[in-house]
Length: 374
Image (cartoon, rainbow, N blue to C red; front, side, top):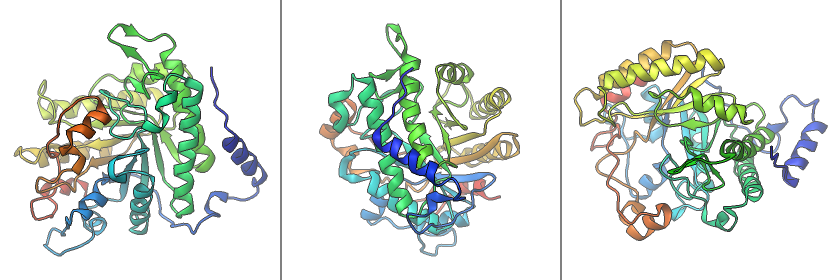
């Protein structure tokens, strides 16, 4: 199986070997912001925050007092922050510089940090795993793509380290059910399984995993799938058999986004599948994305019920609400740009606002966020 080794990784490994007697060498280059990793992460992904603030959106605590979003979230019980990073995103939002700046703010607020690598210029998910524009010329070359992944992962995490932030968790790829960085790391097409697809995916994924471990050896590094309610055991078993290494399992759960089952049933199915994964792998399980629809009257109770059971479950170590801070019909500027959406996704369309934010039109947390209180 392909094992990516870049000059930068080799040098970092050599330096690490020379520092074996130093108990924590990764904190030396910058001024570390010390944050304790919570036993159970009550988290939020707030990757839109910089753009929202640029658009003059402000936030308030539940009592109406104006406050920084991180202070508002801490009042809600949130103790961890997840931040995505894109390679060359529109406007620079969720790029390396933006992500690092938000990570510093989160760490200074006493919150543990998770970094979510999409390895794309825009959202990567089961419907699209677009190669970043800067890497497009190498999209059919597995070796070169692995090198891009390793070098980019190192670059981003090195920037975090230099800023003093040590992430507790690192997610390599986002909702990679059908692989990542298509076509090099794709698992199947409409014609069926791709020969050696899982081996190729494992090579790309491990390029990110290995790079992450060089910079932050103690970080929990994991792959991520959508649909926690589905039987995902086969997927993790197959990519592990192909050589993929992971310290934990990350899943998404949106119990009100689909209508095949009731929200209560989606919750129950997700919890059952999480237990099954833990029983086989004995690895921590994280729901790194959760969301409910505030327009539905049972939204708060649906999330509370899930959080209650997840918090009691052996193996489940955290739940992160995806973009709770979205409110008042706000949406990223790119959502209204059909030309840019087409460039980024291959489809000419515009997008509406996110409908699962958990703040009201005045910028205050809704009752939905009570689920994150210990």
